[in-house]
Amino acid sequence: MALNVLVVDDSAVMRKMIIKTLTLIQTPFGEVHEASNGAEALGVLEAHRVDVALVDLNMPVMDGEEFLDRVRRDPGHADLPVIIVSTESSEARIAALKRKGAWFVHKPFSPEAFRQAIQSIPGVFQNG
Amino acid sequence: MGDLTERLQETGALAFEELAFVYTDREVPAERRAIPATAEVRVGFRGPMSGELLVRVHGELLATLATNMLGEVEPPADRLQRDALGEIANVICGNLLPAVGGASNVFRLDAPAVRDLRREASSAPSGRPMARAELALGDDGWAELELYVEPPSADGGGER
Image 1 (cartoon, chains in turn orange, brown):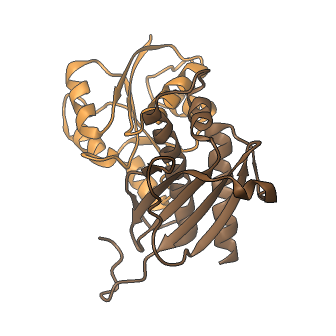
Image 2: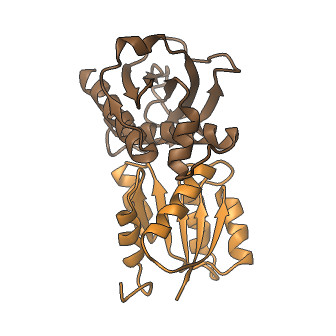
């Protein structure tokens, strides 16, 4: 099954880097949507089917953590797999994000880091 | 202080090499020092302490950095070239802060503010940086990296 992906980052260059990296990990992706902050991303979720969201933390308007909180409170999207893609290095903050059901990929990232994160999401690519 | 300077140089090298595929060297050749600055970016941070990271690039590197980051052949628009340098600075700052404030503390980063010094004046922070490092970039450029930390406020709070 091809995955529909939502990439959320206020840097257009970083969004394109993430999308390019996803193409390198030989995972079947379908539609790729982009948003430059959490508020825009919520709008994308209302308009499109999204299977996994890759989300930066530090963004204007609505940051990645608030986006994650709102998604988890929304019965329609509460189970959406969210991968935080960030330079965040605080062990406490990363642990808190993981308790909210997020995966974490550290910037700068490798294709392997994305592969591991995506393949560890239950129900997604269970056959690797 | 020496450790922080070392860490600043390490995180700078990591970001330029892994994001933009530009090789770095800790020694800037003397003949490059006359190359004018072409762009600078400031990233503010807030947390247990506040401050800014400044990255100033010398040489015509903006197009190279962005082209490499995007994996394209032709240089992208100026907007994306500035965005690319901003993201490099953002990654340096985020990876440097544990060395400044400890791995358990949470910092919030501001959006990078990029200035094209071919068209705009520099806006470097006043005061002396807490740490400063230099990197040779590619064949004919170099970068200055400076970390500024604000003195603690009277009430002892750091976060704005």
